Length: 106
Image 1 (cartoon, rainbow, N blue to C red):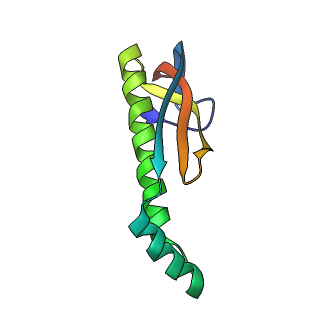
Image 2 (tube, one colour):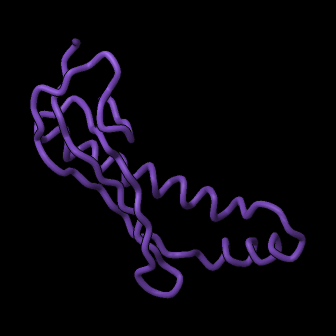
Image 3 (cartoon, rainbow, N blue to C red):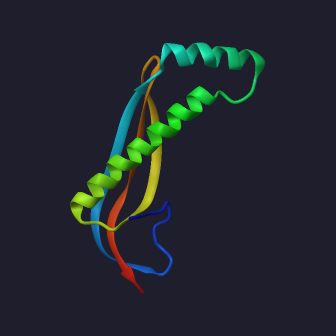
């Protein structure tokens, strides 16, 4: 399945719009990761523990969005976006959303 942040796909024509699809996950920080992150904050540099956690969360949200699009019969998602919001102290929601479409070669 093709996923793009643009509203069209080069070389393809949208023949049917199926509607909004989304996928989300809510992740909480882990005490062990927090301790390691605090050490990194002291010495500076990338906080790998959080980078990995957020990357995994984005992938899970995309997988769930793809699953919903597949259920609708889509072969592409256009105008894909991400949104993050804090749910509670120490946890956040990652949401991916876009428009499920059927495309064919031009």
